[in-house]
Amino acid sequence: MTTRPYVILSAAMSVDGFLDDTSPERLLLSNADDFDRVDEVRASVDAILIGATTMRKDNPRLLVNSEERRAKRVAEGRPAYPLKVTVTASGDLGADLKFWHHGDQKIVFTVDAALEQVKATLDGLADVVSTGAELDWGLVLDELGRRGIDRLMVEGGGSIHTQLMAQNLADEVHLAVAPLLVGQADAPKFLGPAEYPGGSTARMQLLETRAIGDVVLLRYAPKERG
Image (cartoon, rainbow, N blue to C red; front, side, top):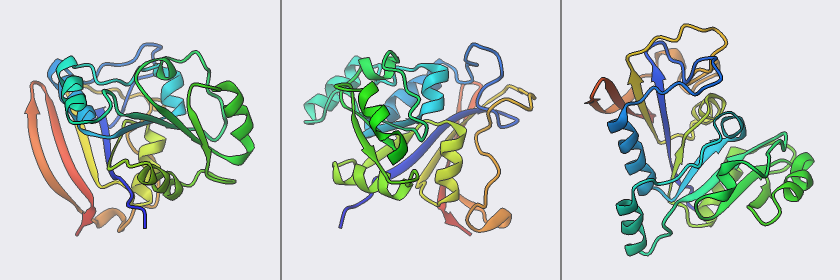
């Protein structure tokens, strides 16, 4: 039986729970030391996942930036960069996005209706896998496990975090809380409305709190609910 990867949700949010504001430029919530912490976590995992909406909006390269950390991965017999993963139900992914042109291997999970479109758009840039008529997170994790992925870091966006939390598929949550208030109703939030396991009274286990400059890191174990 395939072992699914250990899933880490990673996000930086404002005190009022937003991942960004509504301006065209990305709102920088973390500070330099916290960005370095994120880079360290990236270097420790086998794969990093973001949703297609985040990719289109932020156009990230999604790399391990530290040359020393990349060298350590190679010395350990691992690729310099983790596998990069995205999911799309619409198939709306441009081949010019930075995601495809930096790092090592990439994989896209999509649905049957968009499969041929994604394959044609990303020919030679990524493996493309359909999970059937709908996006099935269980099948996504099963396939990543089959490919030897032991630890998966999920960097958003909010819809992805919400789905994984609602389906009780997140093993750990890393939240960097920035001393900012966004206050914009249309801005993206870390989590949206959903039927979360255990309901509103189920308390997650706190694993760590740490001050990183003016940012506070909170680590929770979502499956350890009391």
